[in-house]
Length: 219
Image (cartoon, rainbow, N blue to C red; front, side, top):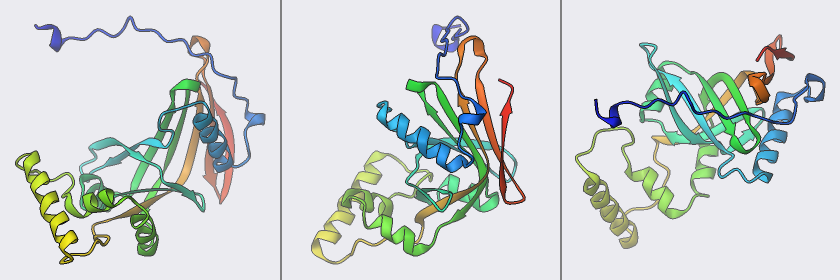
């Protein structure tokens, strides 16, 4: 067996020494608590504090996870943008239940969010699309995200052709119908704070009769 086929990572150790997280110190609103932790992560110098793992599942139950970027927390909804025809878009169409997770390494913190995804209004997707740099707009128009392509040259040739049409005025930049935003409507949000000896702090909120119930969980 070559060294590339075996990795023993069991000896790796990282002891966490985060600020203790007490239930009574957490906001009654998980969204206020999220904003607090996110702001502290940004102030601590996290490279991309809005990077989050989005987990979805296809109709066979197979889960799929990837990192996307949170673009807004509006009306208690977590908003991101993507290609509706991508793998994730097709999975969401089949099964709107999903989860998000954030990891703030500098502070040994994790946030887990579970809920249901729905498309945001087309006008809201338009607003964000036209606020993006032109290169990003063109990329959204061009890429058949998640679909098999023969090579990178295929995309580069398509990019050159699309740019030429835009510069010649024979094509306008516009948001494609297959690209837009999703909002996750949460029913559970958990805040995890790393502590020594793996005795981590976990504060969980779950929605019950339109009220958020706050509880402490065992590590």
